Amino acid sequence: MGPLEGLRVVELAGLAPAPFGCMVLADLGASVVRVDRVRGGSAVPGDLLGRGRRSVGVDLRRPEGAEVVLRLVESADVLVEGFRPGVTERLGLGPARCLARNPGLIYGRMTGWGQTGPLASAAGHDIDYIAVAGALEPIGRAGAPPTVPLNLLGDFGGGGLLLAMGVLAALYERSRSGRGQVVDAAMVDGAALLTTFVHSMASSGAWPGGRGGNLLDGGAPFYDVYEASDGGFVAIGALEEKFYADLVALLDLPPDLPDRNDPSTWPHLRTLIAAAVATRPRDEWAALAAGRDACLAPVLTPREAPSHPHNQARSTFVDIAGIPQPAPAPRFARTPAAVPAPPPRQGEHTAEVLAEAGYAEAEVDALRAAGVVA
Image 1: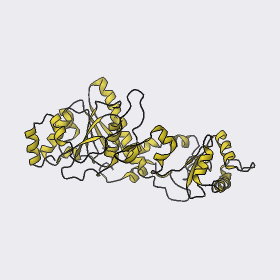
Image 2 (image 1 turned 45 degrees about the vertical axis):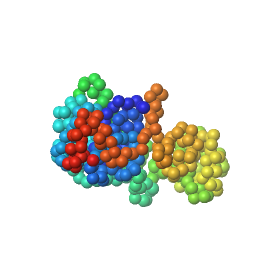
Image 3 (image 1 turned 90 degrees about the horizontal axis):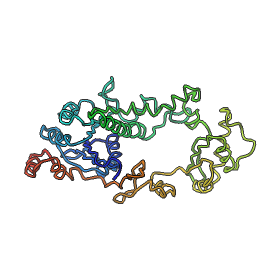
Image 4 (image 1 turned 45 degrees about the horizontal axis):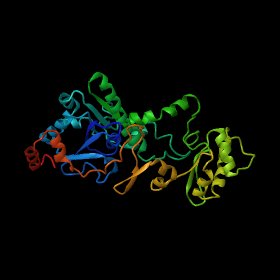
C-alpha cells in the first residue's frame, strides 16, 4: 500500500496546491480524510487531485462542525489546510487549538504568500506568486512578455510538493522529539526555491540575463523547440558536445556550422536547425532519434503522453475509473504504491469515518439531522 501506510491525514478541502500535496501523501499510502462542505462547493466534482481519499461533509462554520474535525484530529498525524492566514483560527481550528487536542500533530498550512509578511492576507494566484519569486520573468522569448507556464511552478512544484515535503520532514523530526509543529508552506517561497539553479548560473556568469537569450531558456538553438513538417514539435536538448554531434548527424546539417559556443552565431544556427527539422513530421524525427543520443524528443500533448512506449513500459500513467492519469511517484522497491481509488463523492464516507472516530450511530444521526454533517 505504499511507504506511508498507516499515516493518518485530515485535509480541509480546498483547491489545487493543498489537494495536490495531499494527493501525493495518499498516493504513497497515507489514509487521507477530506473534510468537504456540507452543501458542496469545496471540491471540484471528479477532480483527479482528490483521488485516494475518503470524504466527510462538515459545516465548519458551526461550533459543532469544528468539534467534529477536532475529534478527527485527536487520532490524526497530520492536518492540512489551504486557507488564507487566520481563517482556521476564526473557525476554531487553528494550530493552537488542534495541537492542544493532539500535541504530536503536524499542522500543514498551504498559502500563496505565507503566514507572515506584508502580502500575507492579499489575494493572489500562481502567476502572482511566481512573479514576485522571480520565477516568471526569465520564462519566454526574447523581445516578448514572460510566458505563463501553466500553474505548475507555484501551485504544484513550489506549492503542493513543498507542502508534502515539509510534512514528511516534520514527521521525521517528530519521530525523535515526539512533538508536533506547524509547517508554513508558501508558494512564493517554493517558487523562489525552484530558481536556485538560475541564481547559481547568474552568480558564475553563465546567465547574463535577458529573457530568451540564455542557455536554458530557449536562447541556445541546441536547447529549444522546433516545428516539424506536420505542425508538430520536437524538443532538442543537445547541451553536451557529444550529444550535439549526434544531433548534427541526425539532422544531416552541413559540416561548416558556425561555432555553437559563440552566442553571436546562434540566430544563424537556429535557422539551420529549424530548416532541417521542418523537412520531416514529428513522429518520423522521433523514430529516427530512437537509439541515438541526439537528445531529440517529440513534444506530446497530455492526451498523447500515456501512449508513448516509454511511458507505457514504466506504467507512468494509470487508468482509474476510465480516466488515464499520472501514476503515483516516485517508486519504492519494497513498499510500492497501489493504484489510487477514484475521487470520492463529497461526504461519501461521513458515517464510516465518524464511527471510526468514536461517534455512536445516534450521535451521527443527530448531527446529520441538525445539518452539521452530511
